[in-house]
Length: 38
Image (cartoon, rainbow, N blue to C red; front, side, top):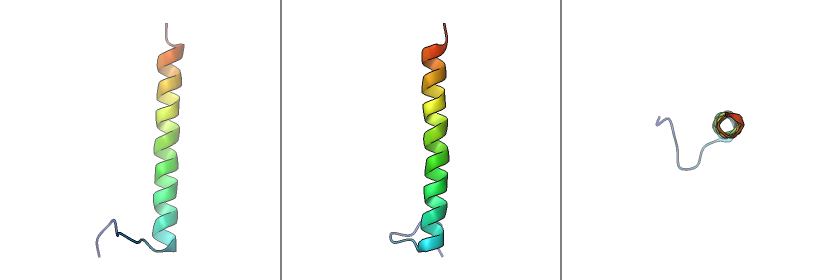
């Protein structure tokens, strides 16, 4: 079974959503930190 399927099932789709959300939050925090840095 491949890790990333073209049409993931419910559980895998939720896992991808959580991972994407974590990555998005990390990117937002990095951007805010780079802007706030002197």
